[in-house]
Length: 426
Image 1: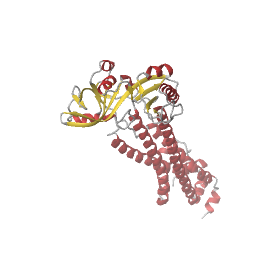
Image 2 (image 1 turned 90 degrees about the horizontal axis):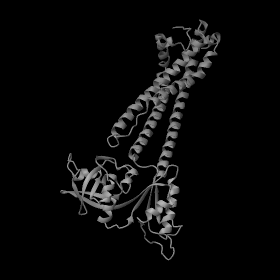
Image 3 (image 1 turned 30 degrees about the vertical axis):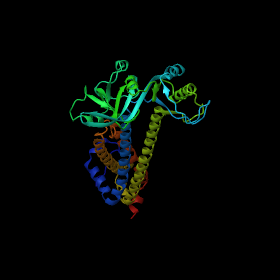
Image 4 (image 1 turned 90 degrees about the vertical axis):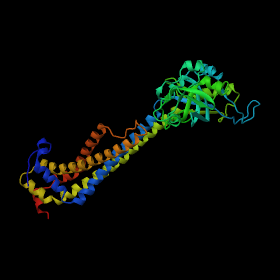
């Protein structure tokens, strides 16, 4: 058996064949014990990488679905009153009106974009003999700054369309799939919605999985606001009031101010909590961010806890190994082995066992994440489940550190053994 007096951190030891044979011979003496200990490290790294990749993938899926939607936006709608006020009974129906817009704009300067919207649901669009169930949305072009339709063909609605009350529309992808044959260009074609013909000027590529105003984006027909006012006899009514906050202001505070303006204008009780419906997208985005921050912390706690449990297992097996090899260590010391040689012997076995098991866990987790990513990207192209190279390198360094720590206690015990005492043990 080889006796070395080289230092533990000497790079030449990496290419010492005898050294490697000795390490693997020691680990293979008790295969079951070594396997179970290595499995603890493998499982800890595997779960850590898999959970991190899965969490990252879910976050990227949500980010892809939410892309193009203003995270500082809010929406206000009218609802029946729940309080009697100034001669009006509770349960009174009221409507936000176009005349409210200049009053809101002057009273709440913190608002950046203020855009009204009309909606109609349960409609049928037809082209030739094909039909599609759709919702109709009347809007101004600035609404695209709040909810980007992600135009993949043609163009979006513009100011001229609104001014001239053009009968043009932007349609969702499912409408195109149901009304037109595969490969047919829908641009320039006329579709009928409740007997009114609109020319398609654009196709939206927005997914139906994310946040959309007024319904599923894939089955929505977008038309100019003024066109919908006239075609549906909506007059001055507003169904949804869309707004964004200027930088430095909170949407929750802005919505409270707008609510007070609307209640004063339409004679609604100040304490009526039902009459004005508010949806705060800013709060939703903040909640999602906090959720994923919590998930990330939980993933690290679970993964690191499992890793440390595996490291304790490695430490235990090295303690047993030192106990079994006490006589051998004593002989090594008697014929000239230095404490550094004993340090190298024990620590090398600990690090090798940890790295082999840990790297196997990383590789296996990466393979599973790759399969999941490929299957998910068919529906969500922006989803990324793979861990970054920096995370992989960090995991390798962490494994090396755990290997050193796991072998530290048994190594210190081995270095304290006196040659004479060691050789006397059975």
